[in-house]
Image: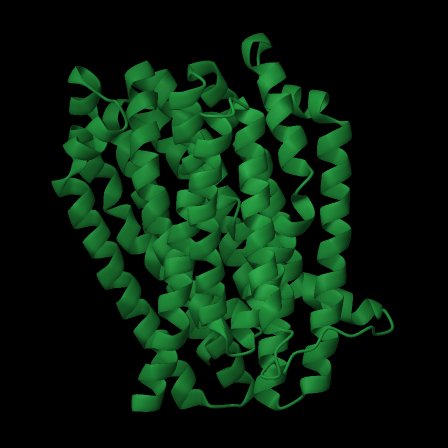
Length: 430
């Protein structure tokens, strides 16, 4: 029991810290650009964010897929297949990164238009997309190497790399935006350099004698590529949940509540992003031990870690909800909200935040399913969660009942998914 608990702490705590740091990555650029360049520049960065989210989601296809396959192979004692998976996953990530780099650098103008940049924001959005895309290779490889580093029993390396790169990103954002006056270009370069440092630190693990996973040339096998893509597909789909939900919420708030609703949701979304960072972190930390326990056919360990994962998410999400509701006004003020807008945030935070508790359970069950080769069930769950149920509930209920029910729809959507997830989990355990 003590060994199980130690393993849980070793993997889950660093992963949660890592994801919280990634959350800081997402808001630091906005904070510095908004204060150092202006509202138009901040808007341009926000327009570009969906592109970066989509890129990272595609990166999950090759990275998490490879990590899942490697974890099961390690549990089975098949290190040759684990190393072959490492090579194939790494190579696939390099190809994706090069395509992203060329697309963002050469097609920044049409990309900015596709993302919805108007005349006022287009030039700055293009600038941010161009410079961010130039660092696509280290950005995606850092995610890829982190997954394999965790599976190689070195999650602390990942935590050190993420904390160091986050602190560097804060410093470089300040340096490039304020003293050097580089604007959105500076913010994009700061993020890129920070991710490069992250990649190099994690890479250090694989250069040590302790690393069991080694990156060596292997003949390319289509079957291994297909296996990685199949296992990574559920997590890629899951990454689309937030942007789809955000688009639906903004549309319904704009139509039925007005501009103040959209502005309030922007602030509440930051709280939601923090909470989801904690929940996704716990799922990512459990992925290696789910996979290795499954590969080693240790059913008792598998069930223990699943129970602990659900408890961790229940407690963690409940704390997030409590803090969000208690400190909703100071949070609103921190983001510059005053008067009616601050009141709108305080009034609607409890209506929205309770959903974090249900969302945490869904995240753990999804991670359990794709980590134990229940990939079809994981794909079904995440397609329903990210696209079908989310859109139907948020848009459908708001169109029918109008008004402030929109603030409850995220929770209702996640509650519906929880019923489906429980059924899929029960079927998987049989």
